[in-house]
Length: 354
Ligand code: NAD
Image (tube, rainbow, N blue to C red):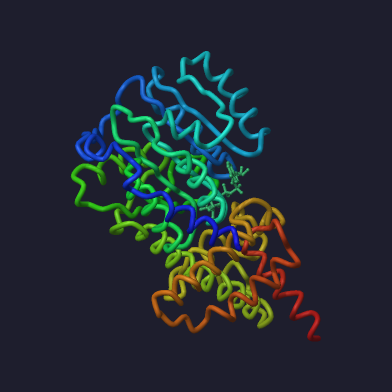
């Protein structure tokens, strides 16, 4: 039995009838202002999560507590050490939890930032499988910022809601590691607007780590929007690499070509900000040997998830399989590099054909 199948069965086994806190959970009030002595949880201190948790720590009241958890002990250790430095400026208390359940038991707001759907399912399963979480003064809010597929996200939302352990919101983000560090991320979230102040509460939390928060609809709408955006990005990135390669081989100056396109109808983010040709945009990963940026494996994962979301909803994606073939080949050769490395791969293809 696959892990995901096992998890879906496990989630189904958590019956709402086995929980007794329904009335108190349903009537507990939301608050959108930051209260004092709150406890926040953050699980997944990777490229994105580490910087987001740092911003959270800096912006929540010093009387609050932040509980962190990552399977990679180096990440939590580093965070704790950095916090001891920051503690001189009287930031909040930081505690390292030994498991996800411990974080969930104490946190009023719990944010997750994990790589793949299986990681998110595992973490939520481990939080929910031991029965009711202790009732807190304010209803628990789970915000998952990971890019996962809508079906998995709705499954997790359903598990949280049917067991009445709090509210689950999918809120993936855009803006990359630079945006995470600067606290300028854009979030797109899925949350039922029927539950009064939920949307405002979610927005007030997300704005501690970003500058925009789009409410896209009910559960799953955030990840659907994220995958739609990243499908477009995947295609634009390949097309930009092809066009730059074509122009250069026709004898055009790459900088002039990019400037022309950026004031014409072909303008797009990979051409303007993340140009794949070294030297065209000095701040782009291409100008530092494709280091940093948005990793090719994450692009590959998002494309895979977009394709499965399209299959589920019956939406044809004419270019998807072709793009997937390209990203798989590029990942095999340039693992760990920014996804604009597609351009380098194309150049190698051109050379091989000569
Ligand atoms: P990452 O791999 O750098 O970080 C994930 C972290 O989760 C790691 O520290 C890992 O140790 C931890 N982890 C894994 N399983 C765990 C578990 N069971 N319990 C606790 N911790 C666990 O990934 P990232 O780049 O930070 O991305 C996180 C999410 O955000 C992904 O879904 C990604 O697609 C999305 N995203 C990434 C970017 C980007 O530019 N990196 C941009 C937008 C969205």
